[in-house]
Length: 103
Image (cartoon, rainbow, N blue to C red; front, side):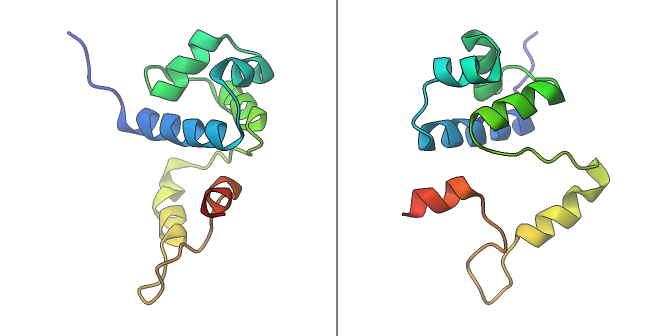
């Protein structure tokens, strides 16, 4: 029986793909910079496979990002900080990649 893909892995993969494309890199180039194989990177980017924290840190750095690991109990607080106030349609914080896409 094949299980459904984990939505968190899919979301992470989408963010990595967005960052990779914004950086103008191929999957091969990103994998090389992160010191992993292209098929391994592809599986991470598509959400087909989980990766160790060290691998994710290497991938993030290869894309010019920093990955922040936080305890799961703090996720709701972090998410609320990222939500805009009711009278503002902009998030409180944005990534460099998001800023580049708007330019």
